[in-house]
Length: 428
Image (cartoon, rainbow, N blue to C red):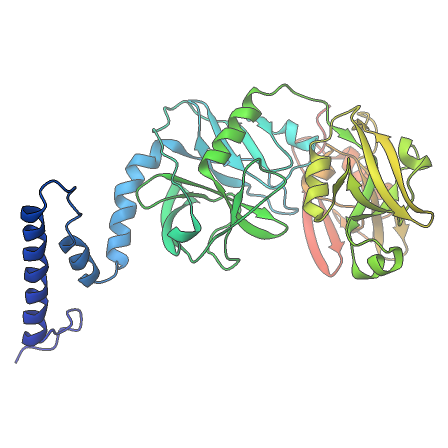
């Protein structure tokens, strides 16, 4: 007797006979119906559907074959884009990009520093609110792509996810269990929230198993979302065509609402002001611990609404803020000013000395090598080069005396984390 083959389940003779009888009976009924009612539109032959249901579920070999068929069709449209990562102390910033023109690709990155981002070679445009970035790439013709329609009823299902590999961009199947429609202030059309456990990172471009563009993965208040392909392409077209604007700032810092602040102020939603720059025009009307509940009459329900609004703020723009504070609720009108660029001779870091520990960072000059390296206010420089527990003067001296082509290594303590960052000297 031959060994049992576990890959082929046994079907009894009686079961096979019953299935054959059912299929023949359905076929005869369908043919008779066509003869009896020839003037009626033909119904879909149910036999293929019945047979499909009897087939086993797709296996790994089927998924691999699907990827192999789709990869050549999508190869010309997928490129690897390289931009310095917005995540501190992460060096290799490489993301999949979708070629939308012969020399232009679109990627979705986390928001970048407003000044440092423009210094990146190859970057053409970027929307700091959504992270959508246009990058110049090598010349090539993109493949014609269809946009796959995403509906909640079409899930769970497999999609093809783009991954950056050493030789370029590769594809792999990924299972998405469910989606539900939601809204994001960073995108002009509805997006789809996907399970947090989905094996896709922000910036991943997704395709249907047939090779149609499903969309790109982004984040909404820390939750992964799928931005539909047509929404991403429409936003890329607008970004490419819009005129450049001078970015603006209110010169204030805020934090999300907490239950304690809500109880103390009576505000149900909004953002809390944690700092107002002394030279700011808003210093007369805004104070630390004030709660901004609405902007131009629109309530701030989530922190992401504030982040997106400030990311797209332009110099000279006037906003009406509904503020709750010690003096009750009031409307404050403020005008955005242009983001100040640090003079070439200005120090990259403003610090204070902590005895026997090092130098605590108070301010980081936008666009400086320190900002690009990921140094943040609150970091403590515990070593620079061979100098342990340096003073602010020693840190600044090491940065100013370093060769242009050799970064200075700083040991950083950030909360409970310990990092080593390489700070490049600013080009003269």
